[in-house]
Length: 451
Image (cartoon, rainbow, N blue to C red; front, side, top):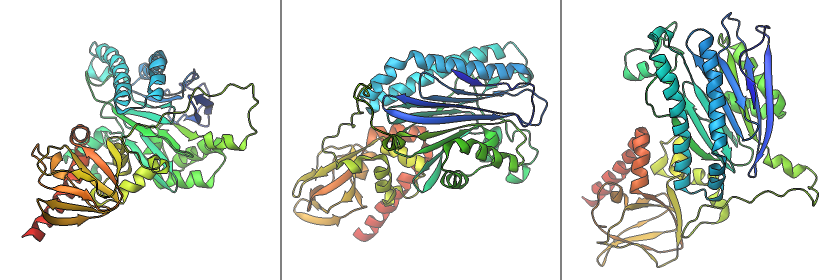
């Protein structure tokens, strides 16, 4: 393991850089971590860790005064990496069977590791007055096969560049953000406010907490920026995209990101990690010798009863398909990725029955292509096409189906089950508000036409 923690005797211009290429279960990642000491005389509180044994990248920013916070940040990064390494066989099992159930188990294990570390620091803090309390933020990315698990506890951010767009995947909260959302302060109060940069929750701050854990499928040429608040508060998604498009030499990117922070008068230590999929670059290299070691296996596709064509199963294809549907117009990119984890793709032939009147059901259907007929008894009610949906009442109540639906052409659907959707909404209420608002608008339009 390699660390970037407290700097040496040199001050402001000192810049430490660390890199590691990882090849773990077919996922090839390049990562560069950078830490820049601020002008202040106080010791650095940041730790940047890139694990030698796993594609695991960690940022910790100590909270509190004195050397104790810096030591806590370093110890937390070390312990988290150590415990994740202990679960290596479990992580490999996920690569063999990347099901939703195994994905949730990975999240559970990561959360339990963090809770154990938090309990230790929290109990230590109880022995001291509040002004002596210490802790650390924690931001990490764990890559398994073609999947990444991201975690954020504090006020850091994770940016994703994919194709011609850039997004914020994870957005931490400071005490200021919480006060602003509650209406206790306004944007005018921001300058000089003591809660401007202090994280709302961090390791050691609360006895129990829920960490923001996020899973995503990686695709070729993806680029991630994991950053503590110093840089992330002074940079926007478009800045990240423009920089990655302008500079193709990955090794030069950290210095360029640092220059952005310095040009915007960031006074705090600047720490971040840039991660890039390097798998596509392997195609440019000469073929391996026959006696070279071959990868363990390719990742299995998630099993589906009637899958769509292979190119439609790619994460970005799924996002584009959902993005074009009215039901998901208001969702952010991360919310779309969350929806992808609970949907199923299904195709049916012309003449097949999709749902039957008076039968029970817990799924709604969204048409990706094709044409269906809605009918009740012997009466034809409506024809639905791409972008329209039916069966949405099954997400709201347990009543029997009020009508039947039959395919008029070969048809492709996205289906959403009530149970997984409710679990998602419990964790992300804003997503639920957006989806049910779109559903209610459609129901209102149908009622107006019926009357």
